Length: 232
Image (cartoon, rainbow, N blue to C red; front, side):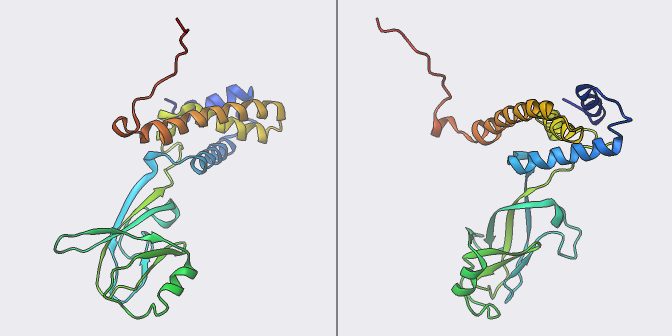
């Protein structure tokens, strides 16, 4: 586990410099850039969130959080990826059905009269702009929706002294910061060393987050390490 203060000191120690060279402002930028690099390199389970709302009858557009008048979180700037869109009714069996993601051209060709509502259930969705998705056919009734998203986590700072990364993957965060620091210090040899260290640490984190945590022993079997045995 590493706190904000500890990480700042580690960066200075590894770089063998002081705060006169790497000021607080520079280190804050280093941490932010390092975090963004990690978040764009690997999908972490703690980034997964879900948002809910209602469609509007005879309107093919669904506004993402931050575009509505309610104080909904996360905001548009927090959302990095839409994982899925599910619609369901609020009465009867409340059967859920997943929408298939397509591009806007397909959506327009599939349902060329988007201003006209249809009794058919929506089947497809597409990203329209930063804060809006479009669905087709345009529903003539109100549906509830659930959207699975990847949310940009709150970064490490003096006001947020620990994060999931700093607690659970401090090596990944440190090495990413050192890569940014040695770029700033124009030290290519040190940069090469810590790029390799970062790649290895990131791969280990990916094996945990994208591999082991998504396995199921019933379906995938227990993890085993092959052990060679000599023939009798």
